[in-house]
Image 1 (cartoon, one colour):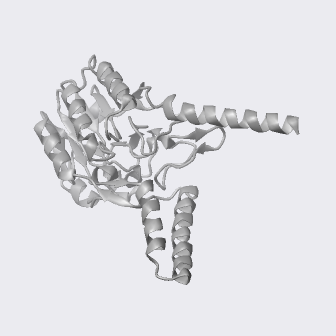
Image 2 (image 1 turned 90 degrees about the vertical axis):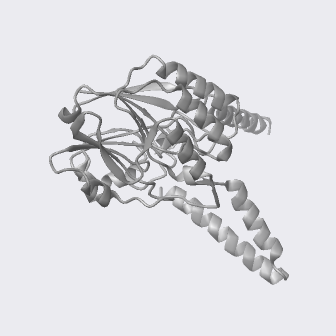
Image 3 (image 1 turned 180 degrees about the horizontal axis):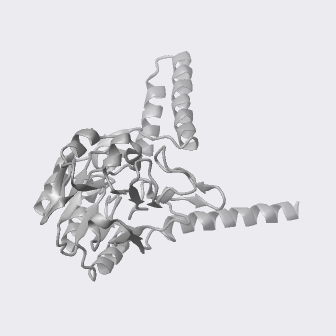
Length: 324
């Protein structure tokens, strides 16, 4: 019995250590991920790409992560700054969003953004379980309670099945103050590309376009890209990289996205537990994608924050792109 107890104790300690590392080891870190992209229409541009801040109520991890980010970007001189959504985890994060916008360096050709699903709503596991408990508690008889319990357990099983199958997730959505976020972005000179396209200043041959979120918003990809002149090239922003695989996205030569967080928890040999999308493999839930179906290129950021407070073998990042 003693060897078994020793093994169980060692396993419990190792598991606790891994859990503690996933919670506090990588999340406060901020790495710089550089890319050299070959795309003649935008040759010479330097681009700072930030995504998925998931700001909520300020804590030491968010504060340290933001301080490191601002320290890192303060030395940069980008031509473009691109923000690909999920600024918010919940409304308490608006204060942190403002601190980020205040600390961004100047960008010669402007700062552009799109919104993500969490800018519209919080997906709350706590609310999910509360709703389940309320449904069971509200049932009038023991039989009804059992039926409600079976029904709610089935919903939870379907959620787990969607995670296993790497499907999109949406549950217990609590609205965020997206109007206030839009106001903040406008105050600090960020151009929100909400299903629209426009030429870059002084570059009529190079347009930038952005679409609304795929899950919580109303993206109009075809309509947005149809407004671009036939002889112009396009940089496209979309929070969810699944849109990059739509036939209409072939109009864009360079695409920037986020949403996947790099999988957050990436296991050896198995890859990411969940990529929050349907088109990127678990083996590569973020990074550079050079051969999209339409012939374009895409960069998907691991993001600055996360939806659940764990990262393992997947630290947050700031993306720096030089186009040659």
